[in-house]
Length: 422
Image (cartoon, rainbow, N blue to C red; front, top):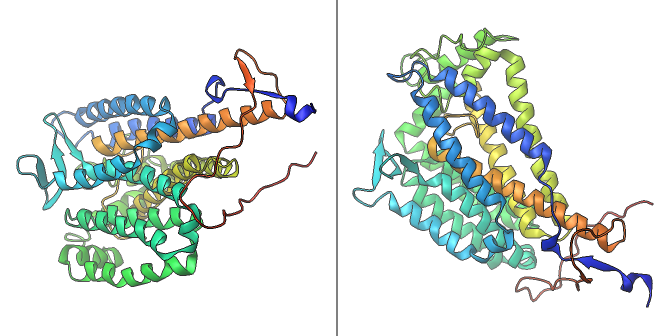
């Protein structure tokens, strides 16, 4: 018996993993900054100066509880219920139309009434959809790259979800969901020329949704020149730009914002970035951008390592969450800076909000679970190679390679590998 066959491995479940410290640190830092800035920006937004702070802390606490559940749940357990999660997306988007349950705010019907609070269903849909699409890309990895039906199915699913979201008058979330889908399909190996065709067909429809909807068209025109109608459609953006300009290099000091005193609407949610720029200046803006770059970049790196180790489901979840957080943060900051039209998207982990805070925490919990299982798999590989001793666990014969998953009748795709130099 040679040395390779005589090696023994520890059961994967018996190996303790490690949550990624950089990922956890970036998320905690953003959440802590969010608590401080919600306290500062919302002080004049309600009858009680601490109303939104207490509310934010409550939902952040609930979100942390849900994140802990996600961190302790095996991804293979989550993957088993992929079809149920897709059905849940559709059901949630339909619940807003149930009389007595759905809530309309400023002409938009996006919330359901839970008694103690309202819940924006699209925030949960983002998480559930990313998990479903990750599972789909695992099951049909080869077909997605080679056949039209396998590629069009997720596009058809997202088209259905987008229609339901647009009926709620939420153009921002619909474009974000479409962008996440396109990004995950590209990272999943889809043929780019083939995917570009339906996207190019859909672009005129998206443009028409803006042109023929008066309130969306007003947002675009006010974005192009907010000073033309400063007291009307350009009111939010012009005040946001004035707040950012007042911050200069090092800000006017924490708590010193003037624009938050009932001049800038939605200052603790959609436009909290403007208060950060006003009070903490260019230095504070760079800090926020650096934290998001660390969080998103680390998530992409973890996803890449998972795919390299053939843990595709975990890798695609990491890619999806990274795309979501990265694009939503970019859009939110772009709106505040006047480089994008107003979308009504919050700044992840920083802005005040019930459902958005909770679901972002769940996404962070999933990311940390991915990092934990990656660490555990890397330890198992080290044990198989004899690089580390097995401690505190029963030994058993080395496991056989996992069978190829999915329903592909094509030749399996060759995954890229990088040889280690001794």
